[in-house]
Image (cartoon, rainbow, N blue to C red; front, top):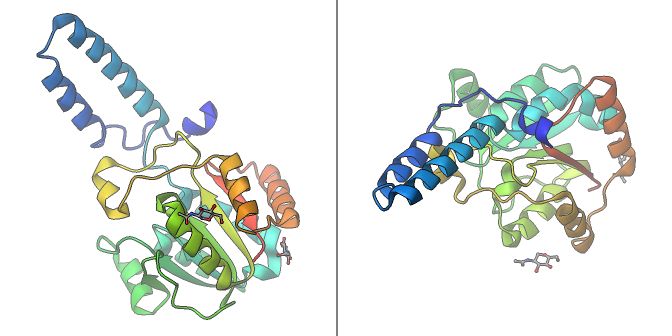
Length: 246
Ligand SMILES: *[C@@H]1O[C@H](CO)[C@@H](O)[C@H](O)[C@H]1NC(C)=O
Ligand SMILES: *[C@@H]1O[C@H](CO)[C@@H](O)[C@H](O)[C@H]1NC(C)=O
């Protein structure tokens, strides 16, 4: 676990997250000298921990790196892919560079700071903004494979119960989920509002139990092929990856 968190220690290290921490410590430090010394020490420890594990590492960047691996695991099922998650433009434009792959994307949060190539993908209808709490505007089995990153971490179980079956509905061959590990912190504080709620990272055992309760089956063949191809390419995702049959 420690090594996963250390993947990107310096990136955005000085970003907003640390500022409110210092500011709030400063206010509290007026109470008692001993208490404030303790608080400062605690603050420094938190800060070190925070900087060490870094922020801004997303499961979507895992997806970008995983494309060649997914191609090995899914072969023909990669011909018509839907990606759902933040930075979908990046995933879609990368997938479109692959031979024999068509790709579409759903961006669940916002496209306000989209760059010009992303705007062009939106204009051409490859990427759209859609609230994934509601049914996706696609017919059943519109895609061979659906890949979702980060987004499920921001859904309560109530919405997860609706969204996950809907993602499976639009997929013919499978659903790949990239979800955060408990204890991960990936989003800058300033960006939290766009997700509607803080991420809730669920454990491996939580997800496994949840799949069984909701009648989803993990695709063992795909899981095994994905793991084999990952090992071969020394690919180590920083998020949990699940392969579900649809
Ligand atoms: C979601 O589905 C699970 C499994 O069917 C169920 O146990 C749970 O109560 C549901 N949660 C909500 C909030 O509806
Ligand atoms: C499992 O994944 C493989 C690709 O590795 C695919 O060919 C197969 O159809 C999938 N099986 C099910 C039951 O979804």
